[in-house]
Amino acid sequence: MIEFTLNGKRVQTDAASDTPLVWVIRDEFGLKGTKFGCGVAMCGACTVHIDGNAIRSCSYPVSLAKDKNVNTIESFNNAHPLQSAWVEEQVPQCGYCQSGQIMQAATLLDRNPNPSDQDIVNHMSTNYCRCMAYPRIKKAIKRAAT
Ligand code: FES
Image (spheres, rainbow, N blue to C red):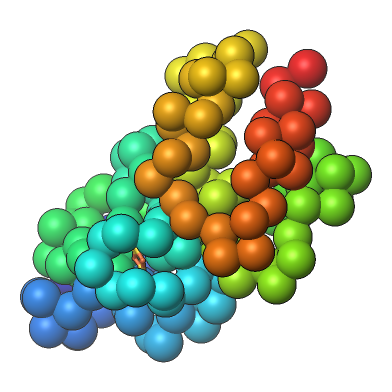
């Protein structure tokens, strides 16, 4: 039995300790906002927060989440400034990577509320978008930061 806090609620799972966190989040707790892309910690679609840090849940064994605070895109409850900026800038095309992009961006604004263009490029360079929405992602982050 592994216990952790998921979006503010204490939860337990009987999943095998090496189960990637993304599957526990999606399949056991039904939080489908976290996406599975590459499965090898390369694309960022599966990004969630653990104790305030952006991590790749496809490559993070659930056992490592024990007693930690895990937050998914659902924790923002559609009220995060990045989410309204994403809508205003019409960022998504296919949309698949976008929750991971927002989770990654949120850790930038947490640490740097007024990032430069280069700060944004550097911080977001770990998250891929196959629709090439990068210019709109950057504009949305700047909008949310203002
Ligand atoms: Fe986890 Fe691509 S699915 S980084």
